[in-house]
Image (cartoon, rainbow over all chains, first blue to last red; front, top):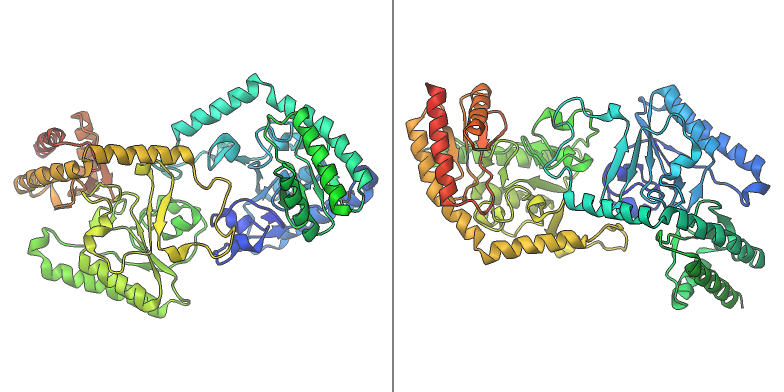
Length: 291
Length: 291
């Protein structure tokens, strides 16, 4: 089972659980696997607690209903801690624990895809740690930030019970392990996870000020307390396209996600001094586009 | 479409066209795609021309029948120039051209998997070149020998017609390209493809002598003229297990394929002096096992 708007990759299995854009799946054979719904919250969170709790309950009911009605047992559930390609959609600890409880009830495995969120980007080594999922997920995937096209760690019970069930000549790629090790060492020696967390703690209130000043063009700011894993929405795809290209013309390379989202994905070395440039450039760009 | 005994990998798409061992596919979801038969020749080839021609015709008829009767159009055919995991099974130029003609007749693409055969191992840069397939295959895959988990080259018409149809953050991996370039340079500077061809031209007649001397235990020698991409069969899986372990005890690491095959897969740096050690060790091992 995966979730609407999820992105887990483009191969035939990962593509079968990817639900973000039609272009990702065009002409691709696909397994018919169940699709649930990921919570869509109203922001700011503190003003919308009741509505967002109801949204959690609605989405969990869809998950459980799929388990009850699918034509065969569902082996596992794969989910991003924060849906990224799908629009930087966040969910609560209650939602993740509820999901975990349903997987336990129906004997399914819980797979967490940390390709975008993992390796420190949200101020934690793994974003799923924030939600105290109990017991922890059965399998966690990560990738590019550790210089590989695919890593994972998992519960010991996943160790294959026969030789050659999981094997190829390419298992273990020393040069990528060396690179991943060097990346971890650099992050450790320079306290980069604490640093990106501090940058985010500075940046988020600055973006809240922009949201207060530009309430018609800078919407649904989200990612508070999650380092610089921050996103906001624009009023339309057309406005976003202009915003992104003007930001670039003004010297800041920044990307979109889903239809109207703008997401920040700086490296761990992104500091307060860089965040100031970002804030000033967003302010300048919005002011010029509103003029 | 793929062929019985084929091995193309273990992911969900490549696994769906892999047909070698049950352990490779155990508990793996799989697409139901058509399976044809790869020729099974009698050896030595020069004494079995009529039977082997009939085998080509039988296998091509199965291919064409699948095209005619499959419930939907078949998009492509994937095949190894020499089936490797499946037992070092060779096929003729006539078979490959016949297969090419059928793909053209039914508008399907021809994909050649050169993961084992490519990059010089058979004395040609690409083994499929030996068969003068006309027009050439539409897509060729290769991999480990060029230090990557997956490369391919293809007809220009395969270039995606929309942005993002084929894309990920990991496209292009500079360090692997550098390694692949260094491997090619080394092979080029040292004439390694000509060298491995010369080693095979020395080795094959030596193995024919062994076959003549051990007609009950050393069977179906094959791979003549294909450098050191040579294999032979043993009389039973049990005998082969003993042979492989005794060879290792005698200092030569050598591997099996399929049920009773033994295959040679030396590096391009394998020379006559190494081949002599191999021949002497096979002779010594067979003599001891027959005693």
